[in-house]
Amino acid sequence: MSSLFCPAPALAPGDVVSVIAPSSPFDRAAFDRGLQRLSERYRPRLAPDLFACERYLAGSDARRLQALNEALADAESRAIFCARGGYGAMRLLPGLKLPETPKVLVGFSDITALHAALQVNGWRSLHGPVLTQLGRLDEAMARALFDCLESGTHLPRFVGEAVVPGVVEGPVLGGNLSVLTRLIGTPFLPALDGAILFLEDVGERPYRLDRMLQHLALAGGLARVAGVALGDFTDCDDEHLQLRGAAFVREELARQGVPCVAGLRVGHGLDNWPLPLGARARLDGAAGTLCFVEGVVE
Image 1 (cartoon, rainbow, N blue to C red):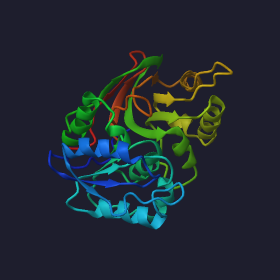
Image 2 (cartoon, helix red, strand yellow):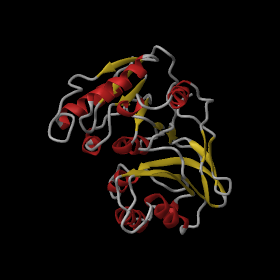
Image 3 (tube, one colour):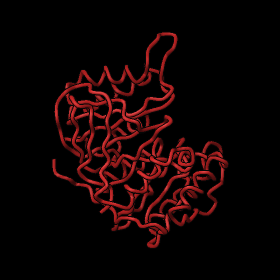
Image 4 (cartoon, helix red, strand yellow):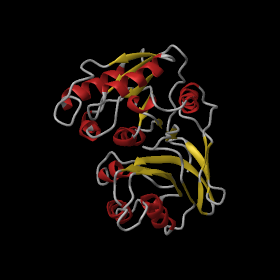
């Protein structure tokens, strides 16, 4: 499968970057810590009314959509960082307006909805920390994030657990399992044919993970992927059944028979290494590795 996804121009230290809140409200102290770390590298431009709150959303749909589209259209801003995930990004998808030149969107969890829409339109993006998470990550992960944004030759390499042997190469697509499966049947889910499907989640018991995987399988999504890469499944265990969510997902997806690795340090856990979406990678199921051959920028 040839690369269909365009990289964004690389950033440089001191560049202007946009900060938006397309999903839920967020903890101000955690946000401030992340903003401080971001400010040490770039010049953040905060969206107007960034700290708004309306029920479980960071302001009205109209406000959040306007901030997103303005950040996308801002010619001076070189990337877009999300304050938090939570819920609400998929409510913005019908009004999304993309400029001709791609720019990097950084975020994860609920931001999967935006990543998927960007991949439908041929963009690469970065599954990486939101601002409320960035402040607590160690220096190596922050350095890796900035390297991904500033160098097209900085190609992440992940070492996890071998699950199903085999070597495949393709674009990495996916993100949060809960969000991704909600896009099935909509025009905002990218075609998974020949892709390496990346999945992670948080706070979902094994039976709920099972339901989502069955939905994805019944919709034909799992039949078309070249391989599977699994990140963290944080707080997804059932103590009563003594069933670990991560182990359950690994066992279920092993039955697909495609090359598979698990245990990548990406997601809602203590670690969240940046992972390009839409960029090509080489997955080796026997070695338990996922090695990118393209970056998110050039």
